[in-house]
Length: 306
Image (tube, rainbow, N blue to C red):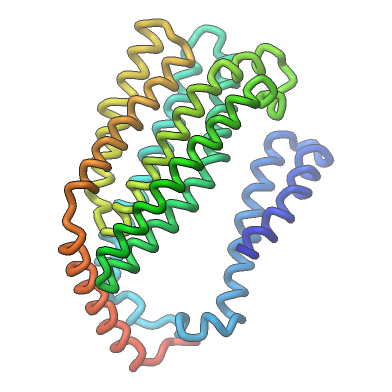
């Protein structure tokens, strides 16, 4: 958290200098983002190297570091795919907006809407990481009841967050676009789609809740398939139909995204409610014991450097 905070403090003035003082314009914004990412990487690397808290977790590179890599990738690749499918669908909506009449206006408002979604998504994404960690820890410790309790508590938190942020956006809809553009037409168009963006965020809150549970249970592969079907078999085709056949314009694109999220949330909820957490706890404990045995073997060998 401290590393991220330091990066933000660096990023703000760096963006201002590169955008307004160097003449780079929007290219300066991209360059500032790239530099900030590397600043964060270096800060984290220094922390790992110097902090006493990492003495037991970092033992240096060795061939043992590749043990269990296949098992890790079986979870990591589908998990990354889950996120990519959703992000790519939002980007596809922006690209499709360029095919509409008055593409400059619609694309501008779609880009602002996408940026808004990304901004407020950081809240739910953080909560998703929390519920995923809590569920996996409780299942790994053989406490399915505690996992269920954590899910119930987080369901309330996600609902309150989704409603609070969504209603705040609606309340600020007439001035929100001014943070991005001075064009009155763009600001008015953004105000017209804010209610749809609020609905997207509320559904995204529930999506993050169930996706976090799925990750905690190790069902990443199933969730990736659900995401693929929700966005590319349901959402995008519906968006194209509403936008270009029924002539709903940019609102049709956002409605298509809402339809994708409804399908996604419904399928993830069905998967969660039909699951046997007692059995999942047993499976998680088996994985934990396997990792513990692997770590015992690794601690007996020396790394190439430490």
